[in-house]
Every structure is written in structure tokens, then in C-alpha cells.
Picture 1: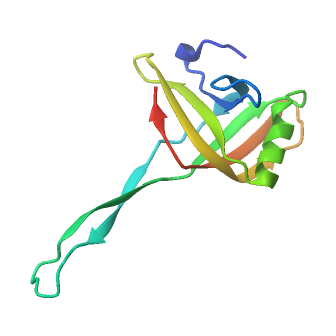
Picture 2 (picture 1 turned 120 degrees about the vertical axis):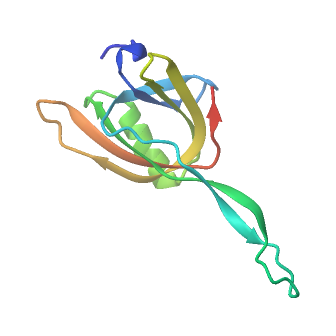
Length: 140
């Protein structure tokens, strides 16, 4: 797999268990790539005497991110994903993709695995479908 993210390759990395802020590549992401959707709850601040509903911004919610990853059976990160899923572990993740202009965007976030599916190793390799439920999101 090419490491040149500006060539249109997108990737997902899982933070190394022993080295903070070092991300181990899980594999190349396949279409469709997830967008980062943020939403905010509405808190009602209307009083009993109010004739108009009043509200203010509440908590921010980050929608789950679903990824399709091409990997191979020799990738040791797959076993770590299964362990994270089983334990409900919150890990740091690094999502990299190139924009139309070739600029590399990096999203770093903490999340737990909501769904994990692997396909049999076929001629095109192993595919991993993973849904991450973010708790934080930082744009690098």
C-alpha cells in the first residue's frame, strides 16, 4: 500500500499500546469515506410565562464513523481490534484523508468500537468493517 496520502489514499490508525501519539496503520480505507458529523442538543430555557419557545445550545454529539478497511491476514492490528471491541476499550484513533486540493486532513479522536466485522481472506485481501463511536474529536 502506498504511504502517499496525497495520492488519494485514506487511512485509519490505532494508537500504539505502549507509545502515546504513535498510530499503527490498520489498512487502506475504501469508499465511502465517512464524514465527521457534529450535532448539538437543544435545551429548552422557556419559562412558564413565556409565549415563545426559547432554547440554548446543549451538548455536542459526534455521529458514529463507519469505515471499510482493506488489510491482509498478517496484520496484527486485527486481533487488537477484536480485543478492544470485547473489552469496550476507548482508544485514540487517527483518520487521514486527502482533500480535492491534495491537502492532507487529519482527525484524531477517542472512540470505542460499536461494530466490528471481518470478511474471509479472498484474492483482494481481508476487509474489516468497523464503526467507531467518538467521545472527542481534534482536527490536526
